[in-house]
Image 1 (cartoon, helix red, strand yellow):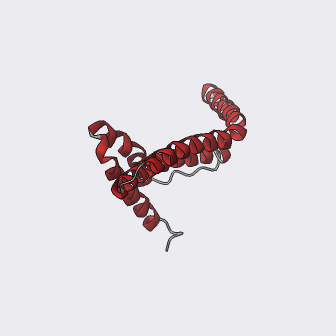
Image 2 (image 1 turned 90 degrees about the vertical axis):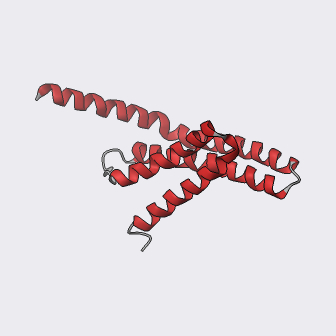
Image 3 (image 1 turned 120 degrees about the vertical axis):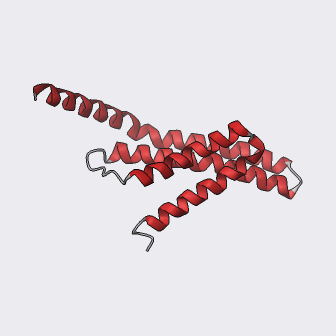
Length: 136
């Protein structure tokens, strides 16, 4: 029983350390990442003249931004409310992993079809919203 308490104390100390470390830094890091990706997107977007290409670049931009924001939101939940976090269930985590992994898998298969990942992400987000009680 003593070893379990020591391990629990150690994990609480590690979680507290990371909470203190990332709490002030995380919003700044997110803002910098989003600004850099937005600037790159805008520069590519303005250089294109074909509407279909502009749609493809915007879809690629959203495909990258959505998983980053999901990851940051989950990290923020763990950092802010680690003790009171309740596991939302297996389906939720499968959808979150699907949102995060789908751009990587599609990019590895063929980067021209990265917009297909956007449909997968929207499907999972819509499914999560419909399953949540707040949406009803």
